[in-house]
Amino acid sequence: MEEMLRSEKLEFAYAVEDEENAQSPVPALRGVDVKVSPGEFVVILGHNGCGKSTLARHINALLQPSAGTLWVKGMDTKQEDMIWLIRQKAGMIFQNPDNQMVASIVEEDVAFGPENLGMQPERIRMNVKEALEAVGMLSYRKSVPTRLSGGQKQRIAIAGVLAMRPECIVLDEPTAMLDPKGRQEVMETLWKLNKKEKITVIHITHYMEEAVQADRVIVMDHGKIVLEGKPKEVFSQVEELKKYGLDVPPMTELAYRLRKNGVPLPQDILTTKEMVDALCQLK
Image (cartoon, rainbow, N blue to C red; front, side):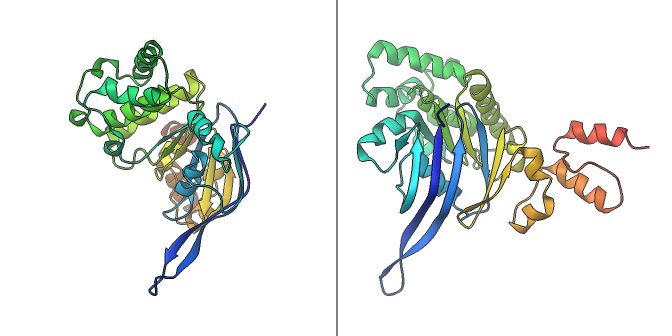
């Protein structure tokens, strides 16, 4: 099966001006090798400046490698004649939903992408309806986007990408500016799209609890992938994650502290249910 995306020795450096206005390269990605299969839900974690957002922008061909290669469905992102196709395959959602709103009515906003792709009006109407249904926002199709909550706006932004029929959605900290209710709304939408619609999701976040149900977790530090695996495999390495300046899910942290105080608990506890079950089994 063809990978959704694959990179080999991917490198990227930003040009930064010094005090004398001379530009010097500042590395953001350092030899990143990554593969994502169709239908996977992958979460990328890392502290600010680790390179995760830079990697996201490469997937959507907003940035191009300084060295190495990244392919999306077999298409090299360095090929300019492929960029339009790549962006149809991999849609991008950013942190601030207000920056993604382009129309004064929800359904018009969602239709903006398909219109730019040159879709026929009948297909646009169908895609907009199905996209709004998929994110649970069809009843808001005539609403004014600016009057919606943060979580609702982000779901509209996701619908706008869905209406273009991508195979993959890349989300760069889409819940960072939302309250807990808004974060829950967005995450429930992402799980539904991944499990029911089989859309590949690459979710960049700094909320550890959002990674618990992922198929795979990737941890980045200083432009490199330093940890990778299933959530239980990654989050069981509490000391290693703390070394990279990261927290772990609340129940994992609690289990870690209890083990340090002599309570014999498993290392791979992630959820409240798993914690309750483990405590109930203690004699």
